[in-house]
Image (cartoon, rainbow, N blue to C red; front, top):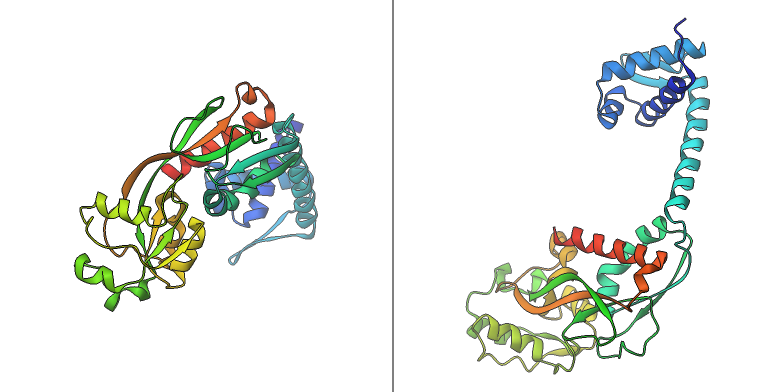
Length: 307
């Protein structure tokens, strides 16, 4: 019988847990960056050390023996407790109530789908999320961090840039004549309904976003003062998905709909709006563990979006 020292035994059980999870020496080897032969040899040595078989091996693949099933269950339980302990250690000091404010569309379409990851990383954090327009004063509001679509300075606050923004038109594929992109804006665009965001930026008029976009692409003479008006960007996008008209979309908030094909770009290219999403906080705020942790998490998520 070959002898395995205690530290080697623990390592071998971890390898066994990997093989049992995949039910494949090959996939386990890929995860651990070794050869399948090394995994097979280590499992045979472990079985010899324990004095019983863990796997049934035949031409159809691997199967756990009764002893293997019991050991796999225990190994998984230990692994789960280890993950919990590491998560608690990593989140040390990141606890209690945390106030996070964001402009509504960014909160609804970008931040909300990512919040489960934040919750998993910092389980002792109790989030208080507030949705507020950029036009609502940030100077007197109570928050630990705030996300805004920047169009000016923020007296008394520090800012970390997150993502630049650009805009372009989108619509449901069914809205396009024959399913083809528009080729003659002067002739075709007046025949199609338009959708407007009255809160496109601070102090903007109902039709300002469409007028800004058409001027940027060299088509300023087209009349866009018609169609439906909404007071939230995400409502405009919902209306576009339902086929109510052509909307102006923000690049950072529309990726999923374009990938799925439920929205398409009927004409034009992305136009920078000379604004960016920023993360705001008061001086000294990032010295608090929770504020630093959430700040760094949001910055990392934004960096992934920009890749």
